[in-house]
Length: 173
Image 1 (tube, rainbow, N blue to C red):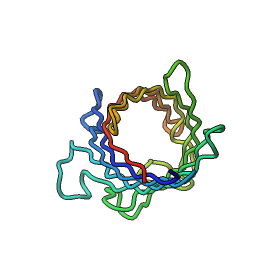
Image 2: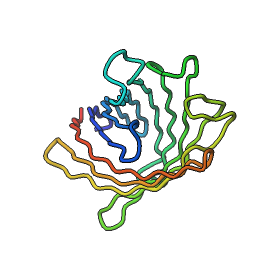
Image 3: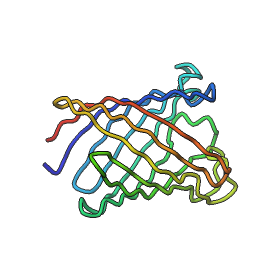
Image 4: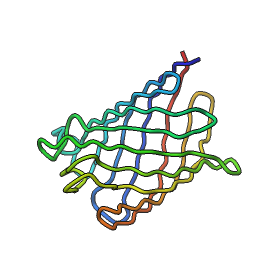
């Protein structure tokens, strides 16, 4: 149908830093080309409580042009648990996804529209240019996505390599 709900869990482990060790839980809804997602980003290097130390609650809105043109505009904002005080970080991203030989590939360009302590910018700036590759292994209504990615933050001239594995259930209504 045109409407679906999803529950997800995603984890990552930094090999270079004591931080950026995540276990993220999400719930999402999609209707036609629009999406709404709530994600609890949990950096377990800070401990579970208090909430604002290791957690951040993100609200994400997406719009995908069409299946024929898989260009997605997303806007995400941290609304709770932000360790950066009054800063309400907003992130806007344009992504294009495609597949070659059953491997899902993506390119992204994302940035912040204003100064942000969270993203450590003094003004609007690009903070993410990236490419990713992944594959989803499906087992009935369960999916196990595996991915690798390279990201570049031109605002800070930083390079990041990452990999991820997840697990989620999805049901159509």
